[in-house]
Length: 234
Ligand code: APR
Ligand code: ZN
Image 1 (cartoon, rainbow, N blue to C red):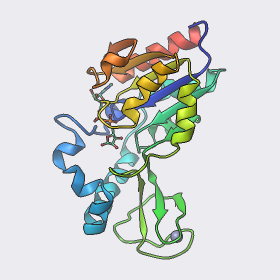
Image 2: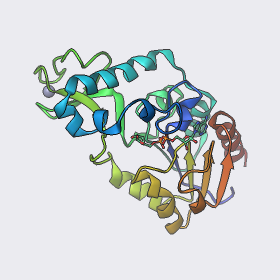
Image 3: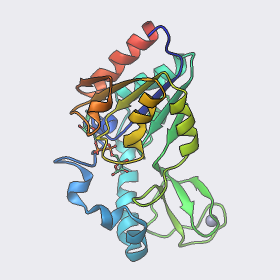
């Protein structure tokens, strides 16, 4: 680890699985009980806003009963102690990284606890239910507050920052993501192109597993603390 200065960590639903937040794909995944196109597209929101708002209201409410696990806490410690550059890019919309102490963190697919008002265009912190069509905290207009979530067909947030971080990193680590959704699934190849080492920590090999220099298979709650100990100790 001697010459590692700049680290990018990409996380997905697998890092929150041990906290009790369901992943998307797989037998108990969220997409098993729902059709993606019914709840996670702008078209679904236009067609049946109540269904979509309720889906995210339930997921937001669930955050009150889950806690960060050792993987989130280890990344919080990495953030506090790592003297080089670090960017944690999460595809997750839960708030478990923040609660695990991470600060150099970016939510590329949005956040459950953020609202986006389509009337004034502003985003604001939100905890509660959108299905009752609350007034926007910024402009006061009711009926146009949507989840601040990047749906299928929408552009992920802060891609320029992510691209710069990946192009200048020495180590790219992917945790708990299936590698099924682009652009995040392509980050490993960009990191390789930039000359970075690449490491995957996942329960099963992801779809892009072959692109990593090294893959360790296991639970995030075991693998992430082990890896962070090694990076901070080395
Ligand atoms: N530890 C580590 N990895 C785990 C664990 C665990 N305890 N449990 C599950 N995993 C792995 C699975 O093997 C799988 O590869 O986490 C991955 C979860 O994959 P997905 O459910 O596809 O989640 P993710 O990759 O984050 O999905 C990407 O898809 O639906 C969209 O916008 C949504 O951000 C999401 C994106
Ligand atoms: Zn507004």
